[in-house]
Image 1 (cartoon, rainbow, N blue to C red):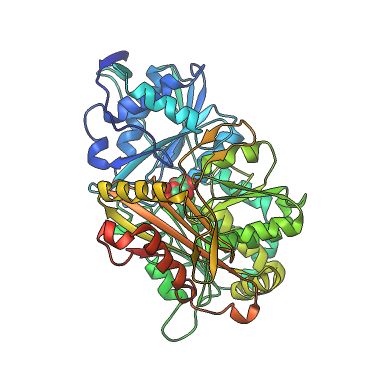
Image 2 (image 1 turned 120 degrees about the vertical axis):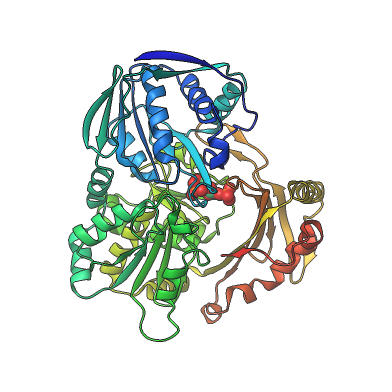
Length: 548
Ligand code: G16
C-alpha cells in the first residue's frame, strides 16, 4: 500500500452551510469532489498527525462508499486511529458523545440531516471539533478557503488493498492507521442512563403507558429500540420505521407534522384511542418532534418546558445555569429564564453558536425552532435525549403531555408560534426579497400595523459573548410592541433553489385565550409579513409549501 498524491482542481461550491456541506448525491459522486473537501478539512486542522477521529453517518445512500474513501485518506494523512460506527452508522449526537468520551481530536459526520436520501437525494459531510460540536464559523471558512486552492489530495492505493469490513466490530488496520469498528449505540445509551431516571421511566411503561417513536427509517431506529424497548421496557413495536434505509423508505426524514405522517395519524386518529406519547427524529438523529394524545408541542414550547424542569432530571440536579435559543425560535424560554433568574442568549440559527456558551457553562440547555433541543451532555442537538426528557417528566409529574403543556402556559403565558416555508423558490426572487427588506428595515420602527407599533427592526447580528466573534446578516427581525415578532430568513440547509422561512409569534398571557387555532391567532401577523415583504408578488407563491 502506498500513499498516492492525486492532482485535483478546486470546486467553487464547497462552502459549508448552516450545518456542513450538503449537496445532491450526484454532486458528491463527481470525481474528486468528496476527496477535495475531506483534504481541505484535514489541511485546515492543526497537528492532525497522530490523532484519533470518529467517523459515521446516518446510513443514507453513498454513506458506505464515502466512509471507505475517507478511511483511505485518513490513513494517508497520518491519522493514528479512527473509531467508526458499526455498519458505518452513527447518529450526530452519538458522534458528539463518542468524541467527548474517547477524547478524540474530532469527527466527521456523513449526513444531510432531514433532507431526502437515495441516489436522487442529498448527501452531506460535516466536521465536529474536540468538544463534540460542529466546527465554528472560523474553521468552516478556513475549510472553504482551503478548498478554493487545493491542487492535490492524499489517499492510500495499492493492489493488495482490502476495504475495511464495516460490519465486523473490533480493530482492523489500514496502512499504519488503526480502524476500530464500534457498536454505534452503546456509549450513547450508557450516557442517557446516567442523565435520566431509567427506573422511574421503566415503572411508567410497566404501568401501561404507551408511546410510538417514529425513526422514519433513519438513524435513530437502533438507538430508540435499544433504549426504549430493551432498556426501558416499552412494548415491542413502540419504535416504528426502525430500520435505517439508504433512501429512508422514500420518505423525507424530517420530524414535523407534514413529514412524520404515520406518527401524526397514530396520535391524531380519526376515531378510537391514541397512544399517550409520540415522538419522531430525523435523518441523523439530532431533531425531535414531541406529540401527546391529539396534541402537538412546538419545539420552542418544548424547550421552555424542559428548561423549567431541567433540575428534576438526575443528570441536571445542579439546576439551570442559563438558556439559549436561536433567534427565530419563540421567546417562550426567555420567560422561564427571567423567572428563574438565569441568563438567556439569542443566537443565530445553527447549533455551532451554542458551543462556546455550553463550554463556558453559561448555559446548560438550548434549542431551536427547527425541532432541535439539547444540553451540555453533548455539543449537538439530540432527538432521543429530548424524548427521554419528556418521558422522565411525564413519569415524575404523572401528567399527560397536554396537561404539562397547559400548566406551563398557565404559569408563563403562551407564545403562539408558526413557521411558513416557501421551498425551492428562484434564487433571484429570494435575493430581491431580501435586498428590498434590508433597504426597508431601517424605516420600519414606529410604523403601526393593526393594534401595534414596530419597536425593533434589524438584520440580526450576533456577538459571541465568549470569543467576541461577530456574525452578521443572520435574518430580518421585526418586533412589535404587542409582544409579537415576524422573522424572515433564508434556509442554510437546502440544496435546490432557495427556501424562504417566515416565522411568526405572539404572546398571550390570558389563559382564556390559550385554545385558539394557531394559524387563526397569528393571521393578522401573517398578513403584515406579506405587506412588508411582498412575498406573494416577489416569489409568485400564494401559499407556503410547509407550515409547522
Ligand atoms: C441544521 C442546523 C441547525 C439549524 C438548522 C436550520 O439542522 O444543525 O442548528 O437550526 O439547520 O436549518 P435552515 O438553515 O434550513 O433553517 P440540521 O438538523 O439540518 O442539521
